[in-house]
Length: 141
Length: 141
Image 1 (cartoon, rainbow over the protein chains, first blue to last red):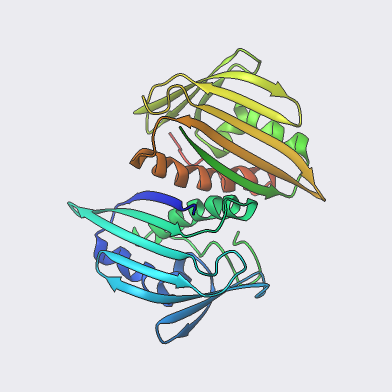
Image 2: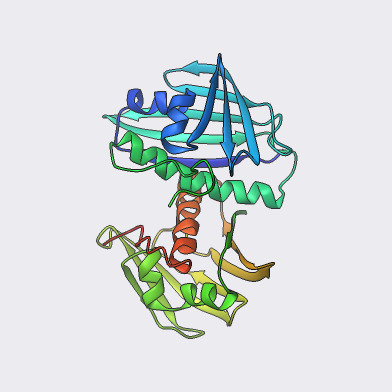
């Protein structure tokens, strides 16, 4: 089962990064503008809701958060794992999107998108001006 | 051996995408402001980052207009030395699909995951450059 792996150095402590990866409100700052919050779950809408990912919070600790993906043809059954390692006020974020059934075109596209998302997340954590990569209707400008 | 794979659809022509990968002016507009390339097969290309704290040295191996660009890497980072960077360009409906493979990594390391994230971000900058959105280079010096 192939995994997507990302890694990024963030100039902010883990306590600033953790809320951004463990809540729907956090996701709305760097990932998708269209989020609907449920208890322990979040719906993220893309391209006027042509795609909706429903993710369920499985585990949330200061240094590790895991979400289980409940929808999406290729996302269903996959997991999003964010692991934070803080050293001297800086955080190394390691992200894994695990459990893909196959290394498809969509897997490769998502790998590319996750890369750009890591930099949006970094910007928010570092207090730099940015917007989520996906607006309600498409790609943010 | 491990390969990094990315892809992104671009609202433009294969010729314009090819131009973004083969001219010094374009590479300075989305990747790094410190890019120097001898724009021919067999020519050298240098990409400097963070005031030349890191310099990637490439040789241009293949130039197939509108279709394919291949570089081999010769330093300076030991993990990059011996890797190959292949850009494949193909029309897809009214769009152009750009596929990128950074192949022949010796191992899946932290730098491998960091570079995966950076390439994801860079693919988006390249797309925005080709689509005339003037993203500016990821590395400004």
